[in-house]
Image (cartoon, rainbow, N blue to C red; front, side):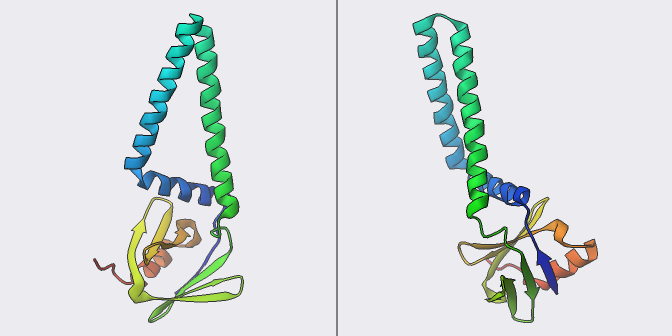
Length: 157
């Protein structure tokens, strides 16, 4: 079973966001600290100026900064990512053969730790840190998708 994969910029950004969301506990702690800092600085602004207008202006500036910083982070992640390279993933009897820029890499099927399915991606987890990300739109039909998933080994604990 062979599939051609090309992730768009939107796909890579969605995947990076998905990976960020998977680390909920530390992310929640950072967001809590950011909100507390934001409230304290807003309170200091309000106490110093006694003007709600300055507090609102400050809040808008900080909100825009956070929004643009997040977009910049995603753009950098896309620029550094090797996910945007076109690749071919082929499942053979004992290997997954990944071809990128005429470089072939073989991964033993026994090294597949998990197969995760999201609403947009099929993610094959290999080893501790490597993942093969396949957008579901890469499959022309549902039957092709089902055949590909069934050809993968069942994850073992």
